[in-house]
Length: 197
Image (cartoon, rainbow, N blue to C red; front, side, top):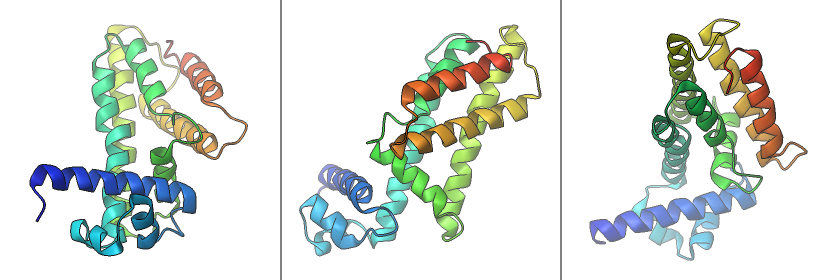
């Protein structure tokens, strides 16, 4: 049996391989063999670390959630003032570009919602974390007098989440919307809603 540190490293390598294989084959067409080939191991070796493909995907989904949820919240917390926090949240919530495999996988999990109770729960949990982060920043900005919002905090927070999700999907799809375009448009909405950056 692998030592704990080695086992943890191997599991991370499997998740990375799953993300790369999913980017190449798409989540719906992904097989355990695809992940094994990408990782350069046998299917049996994968099954030593994970029960099945679904277990690998759940861990990959959780890794994506950590990036958009907990890791982003920690990044935002390093900033001072609601405008700086909002700007950091906006930047960290978008994919890095069309080749951002982790974000692409998160969007594919959204599409598959309704077919797996566990993935449904993860999708809803991530949405709740995104919403809570924007709500917290907006509330801080109102309390400090930095934001003079033009509508209810809940609606504005929902719009920030919807905008980052919609623009992010276009970015990973490799369409005409770039990260720069998305940042500009979301920042424009921030100003129009009274959350000036």
